[in-house]
Image (cartoon, rainbow, N blue to C red; front, side):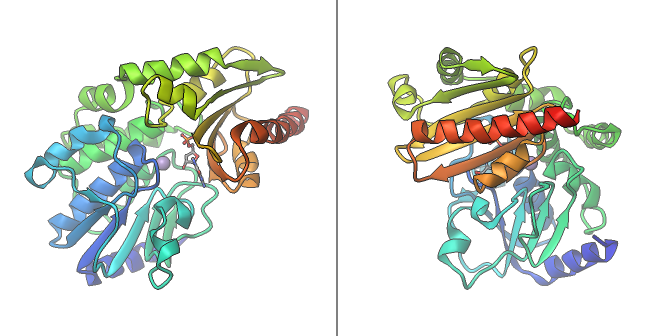
Length: 329
Ligand code: 5GP
Ligand code: MN
């Protein structure tokens, strides 16, 4: 990547009038934070911005809407009449939802991301795989794109950095992540409020989700895994599928190298999440199931087999990766 690419991105944004910025499916804090921060920067520059999310925005991030026009949720499910399409934190085009798949006449103009598996979703790309959050990538390039850090932009960016780094504790966090956060705090982002609401606070439903995960937990040879079926979720009135950190919690058990969580979204749709300690590249396994992500945290959404048919196949591939990696440590 050349610094020149940033100038091309800047020119493309300057030329655009009506810009659609996409969250990814099942948006997390980094997705919501990067879409809002970039959208607000573009609004401040006089652009019309459309905030797009196919899936609902989790309640944890609704506090950011207080900075939106009329304090309202600005997200809609599809863009209309946009002349520029931007996808922050999106590692493959299907992660933007079905819009680009249903409308092949449109394509992504600009992708700003941090996923190692991203091969270049946009016509112009700025991908920094060393960065632990798309919001950190944005923080580092906003000045070169000609934008400044208002308090609301700083708050949205800090929300993404705190949530995607597990509050600065992931293996890919480096000193620059903390410096980026410090700058955002200097610009008015409230670290306690953001970290409490977006990261630490949880609902009783999320506790119930963990209860199911705990009761199905299995651990063997350095692998911890669990599953949550649709019936189990619905019996407890849980209609979303946000695991709220349960897969990481399993992975942090003494002696565990890799954790996997299976969530049955529908009868033949399973969401898989992997977490791995340094030295165990879970993105390798996720790619085998058409997923993606990072070495330490990856995911995939598998259509076709029932969850219970899929589980042994995924566990075999994951165990093979653990075996290969252990040999190399
Ligand atoms: P999580 O397990 O928290 O949903 O996601 C962990 C990482 O894997 C995230 O960086 C996310 O972008 C990526 N990821 C999660 N689900 C999918 C998926 O269905 N497809 C792809 N390509 N990546 C995913
Ligand atoms: Mn991210």
